[in-house]
Image (spheres, rainbow, N blue to C red):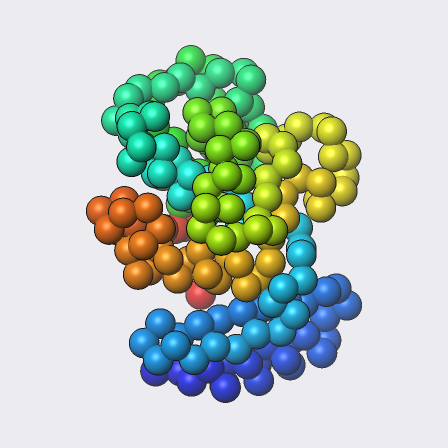
Length: 196
C-alpha cells in the first residue's frame, strides 16, 4: 500500500513545476490520515461537479422525487459539446434516469449531465451539498450555458477538502443511504477515464 507521505512528495514535485494553482486533499479511509494543500481554496470544478450532481440525483430518488428507472428523453435542450457521446446523437434517444447518470460519470457526458441537472434542478444540487455540510460546493448553471462566458468560476466551484469529504461520505455509505451510496460507487468504479 502506498503511504500518503509518498503521494504528498510526488504532488509537491508536480506542483513545483506547475504554473497554475494547485490544491489537493486526500484521506486514507482505513487510518483516517490526511494530506492536503490549500484544501479550503475555492476552485472551479470542471467535470468534478458531476459527482455532486450524482449525489443530488440519488438523494432525489431516495426522497421519492424521481425514479431512477423511469425513461427520459435526450432533447436538443440537453445538448452540450465537449465530452461524452449524446451530443453526437439525434435528439429523441431515450434511456433510464440511472443510465443518464452512468453516462455522466463513466464517460463524463456533458449532455447526460444536463439531463440529470434538469431532473432535480440547480438549487436542489446546491441544497443537497449544504445538507452534507459542503458550504462552498456550488453549481451555478447547466453545462454549456453561455452566461459564464469563459470564466470557469462562474460555472461551478468547490474545494479539494469538500470534494474529499463528499467522496468519503460515499465510501462510508453515508452520502444518501447505504444502498444509494453502494450504487453510486458501482457507477464510479466503471469510470473510463482512469489515467493510470
